Length: 413
Image (tube, rainbow, N blue to C red; front, side):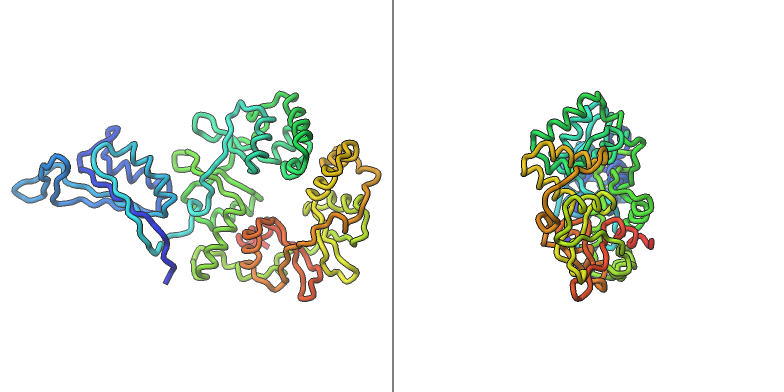
């Protein structure tokens, strides 16, 4: 038997003739619940009852009533019930709304509504790009839908800031700089006079809140999409879904049972079957200048430090180098390094130190025979994008990242 899930039951007591905006209240409730992707709604018509007026309504043949009692019932998880209660408040003028707690076995397909993040940071089209960048960095998010009159007109991602606003560094690297250096970069953006509407990707790709998880996987993996705004049937924004949201949902579902029909069959594949085998490596003594060259030459943006037998000793990420030279407080060298990381200039002639001085020795690894379920769980639990794949002797075999995991789950190579 499937695991029991915490749920809440909304029960709305109303009348058959109760109306709002020229439509029966019970029909409005069903329409609003459906377009918002609620798990399900049932409407029951009673044959006898009375409300606050104490007037008896009955379906007896000798006393036919034109306003019989109506009960609307909605069962869903507590978060979605909480989101829907304000909608009910705007619909139900007369009657009673009851909320009960319980547990249930939900025989429902896994949909985007079960996966998405409900907290969405949005910006207006006229907001200055410098302010957009500051807010994204401050809130720790990678994208912001652009909203005009409650409609999504575009989306701004870190890639848009780099490509269309010519921001020097991606947000993950900006976070490693001192507040003073961050201000310098954002002030430079401000001088360009650009607004959100000038750099946003438009039209923004969106996904309906009722979309099945398997369909979302195929779409995100096939188009290399990292995050999508989630909308209801009317185009109103309901949330945002990212790769990590999808992977977290798959991990949780797989931990409960392996028999959920919506779980990808490819979860049984191993890390070794899907990993990247071409991984840049360095010895502990490799000069940092050489390490930086390797980082800039690979989309992985990292170098694995190994010994002469390919045993993994540590890992160097571009953020580590930026953080190191921020701490050294050498503005000239740091500016050269920033230019190199932004690919707008050549590498600094010399960066003191070697890989072992800066490498992170806590490397997250999986073995090549480990199933994708273990890989995904580690990615989610440790909030990491990439994991090193090793053999039983801890020797380097490859790297696996979110993108290749998504492709594998979607059925790709």
